[in-house]
Image (cartoon, rainbow, N blue to C red):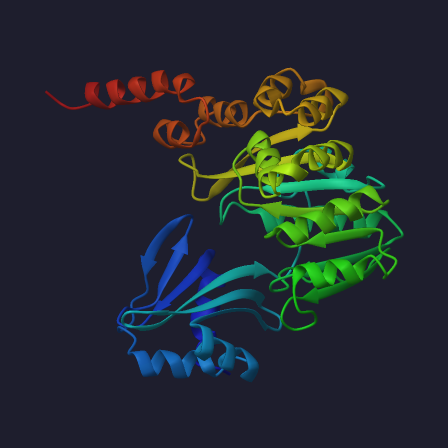
Length: 363
């Protein structure tokens, strides 16, 4: 058993999402969004490096020492998988382990809208799950891939950096490829995937122009493509994709995106105040004919209005999702205001909360 395994088991036992190891500090866990120090001595640089290298493949050690950071996946059989990042910092080495549960949770278990299952059954098109780091994008995509795996009879290819959730073939054939291990890059794997008879392609992240261009091509040529972006709303997602291309190519990309896009799910994570834990608010945009026209005509600023009136199609705005949690007493007014897009809707709740706090102060 590796020395670091004890800290990783502690992660699982405490329900932590992340383990932070940094030379000069004791280990730190992130539990329900807050950092908590483990009762352990500060780790010396050489001690921590030895602990980390004990579980690291040789080629990843070489990459880390050459570049100063590296990503890879690590698994303790029977416990969990972890997404790992090593980095150099001014006191020495640092590392973050992100817990990836052994079991893929379903859309229902995650409390996500049923429309996500319907999206997993689409024959073709582009489905994007977006949000900041740590908002649960990988978990949502894993639930959708799992539903497809159970309900379809198709070929699923995932391209990830690193592989996170492991999908055992059920009704589908599932092949998972890791960038840097099984393939050179997202773009190289995506280009190859088009010759590998896939029905569904999961691209862990659309990081660059070439990957986005290939993903659009795959979605236009009869494949269901799922991927992620670090954007906080549906309209921002559309703009980000278009703006990465040179100006003279943007009209063509607008047309391609309007034709291929099926849905954007934008996620934002909140700390619960009703009980320990976190909850995710979703903005859902379905690419109806009205949305497609706005993308084609460059009027993405009007997309929020379409989302507001598109409930019958399964659409919901981020602010409406946040408001529902706020009115149910699940999240704090201050965090709702901080993460909302239209902050004017939430200012009265913050004022009311402050007034209530003031009236509770004994005289």
